[in-house]
Image (tube, rainbow, N blue to C red):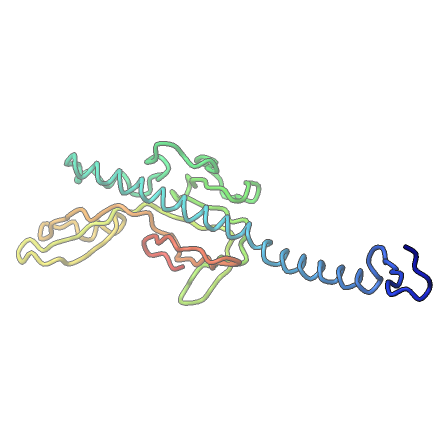
Length: 218
């Protein structure tokens, strides 16, 4: 069957590809989506570093607590002072993969970031922060930017009056001398990995659950 020019089935013209307007709209849309994704996912390295730091710090504190529990169970509470200023990594079965070792030196600028090391001069465990824009020391309520966080093992004691049985103090080993008197009896209180200076590491990009450490402000 043939149809003439007056056919009820008019001829169709098909366009191939995008029009210039459609192409421009497509490019703009992709650019907006890409910019949004870059802004969102660029924060993930910092969030990942923060999460790893909290996990390792919690693991170390658990190792310290386990070591303390074993000491108490074996009746060695009188010898707990040996832990004051000790390297907490020595209390783990194996060190974290990003632990650099015990270092005797003041300059950490050449050490790789996102790493832990033990400062032999100050008897402190140090974490070197890489993404440090949201990390602060808290001094008298003031945020002071820092690129490292320091911890120290402290042995705590309770001092009790021998006559009354009243607890008079809760002090670390470095303050123990003033209570070494015949009127007081010292009792072991615990071993903790304490921040040398209270710190705050603000979450960024994604909301992470905090892992609390003693005296940590986060």
